Length: 628
Image (cartoon, rainbow, N blue to C red; front, side, top):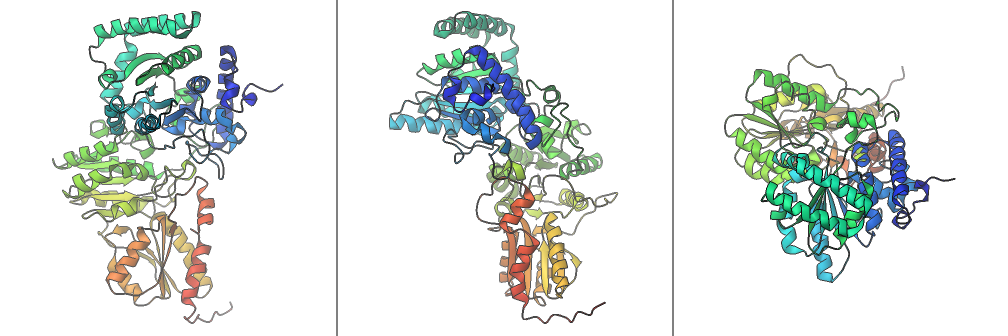
């Protein structure tokens, strides 16, 4: 006899279940998630928290006609399962498999893709207004985590919803966490609401009424009680000031209460917000005990939650180096946008708690905040993923670089981010930063050089940025103290006369591999670690342009506007005509997958570089190889 989960092939199958069956299905889904993601990795904690919510949404609404948008859509795993993707779910985040986020090209039920927080309300408003203009009647539901309400885009949307659409449902999924615990006034505001004893008593009564009677009548009774209580407790409820009728908070794990509430909200002809309380990691004790770890992780033991011991990471080296430097320099402050764990700053925080600032999911604010501190003599360090710093491009230009302020941007996840896919790949930062005047842009070949670059950047009088990859370091020996690097000076690792190979950052490994292959063929190859993307070491470029037949550049970045392009431009400006083979990512969004497999598919390999450079060397005489 099959399980309930195996019988769900579309939301229509879910609608045939009663509440008891739905409760059983919820537990089956949790077990399935824990077992499946233990092999593939993924965002376990967020999805364990939205099982009942996802079931209730699909029991009441009808996708793809009705539109459900998630913020962030890493909490859409159950949505994928309920919309016909159960048989492919074991492929999630795997090469050629399901994406870890909603993807419009993956299913007609995915009406909007989102890998960055703060977008659901704006996008849902756009969908709702388009419906209104077309005379449609479908429902539009935005499901946003409470962390999304620390993002400015969310409040820009709130400012417009009531003025621009006649009907829309916002679900505030309140679990007190993004990746780390939520911070700031908005988080404290939500906490005051949910801990008020009058609300707690009222919603206990609401639950009993709905479980006993069900339907709209019970909810209307509760609603009248809420209105009376709110007029005494908060004369000005935040969301109602924005024009959204507020309901809640209610238990986000009570299926009957959720279903009946959504049935009621369907009938309301103006924008509403439902505040639900959920428990991130519900049903798996290791996820409850390790909220940050189980937000998103690789494979783990499904019984104990233990993960393999990992090597030191670039993020840890960054944070520990910064903490050591801050112990000697009181000007250093560290700023993160809700990513203390991912950026490594949870290693900095306990050592310098008064100089650590988490501003929530608010990258633009983080950068302008840093600029303000820099005007008062501090040395702010903004630790923000490459893909998320894109959101703060204007403040980087206008507030930091235009004013020549000494802010350091440390961009973790620069380059391919693997299983998270195109929303998280850091493949554009060189292109969007190197054209900005005043900024110094660096990329270390290993962890020791990362420490040196942090020291170098702290000593600079103006803005700077360092890009480095996700994951394990190269494994080189570290110096006892970081040393400053002369700005704009590259490092020659091996001399050569036929070809000059420049490997940016950790891509130096491919540069060395190509040099070894060429030398086996009898060619002399120089290997250069550029260290600086901006300013480039033009002296070294000119020196090798006078002797080699070609340059080869390796970068973990798109070729368009990237490091190789900078080399081509510099040679052209110096009037030097030397071919440049650029090895990097093509002008397209790269799918999720294993990094080595994707590099092989797109030609970021020694073999691909060899095939392109050898034709440029054919006119050079190979030295006679003497047999040993």
